[in-house]
Length: 91
Image (cartoon, rainbow, N blue to C red):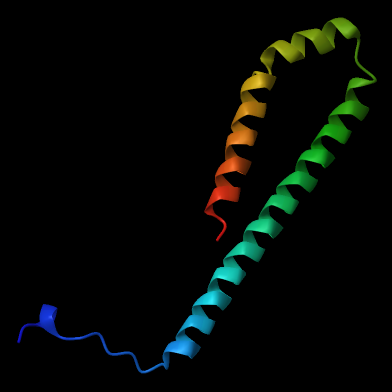
């Protein structure tokens, strides 16, 4: 008998193995949620700070800076894609 033909033997009973796996899956899901919440909080803080800062700028200067920023529609599409992907990966 070769190593490939040997049956897989687990020292953990099947019900405890499934329970352990379910706990790992839940840990991953919770970590993803915390990461997304952290990113959302950071983006909200950023937008607030930019809004506060832009109040002191002239409209012409604001318009010039907007041309230097990434395309808003492209960024929104990428965020939608990220959230859709993360939702489909969640077990």
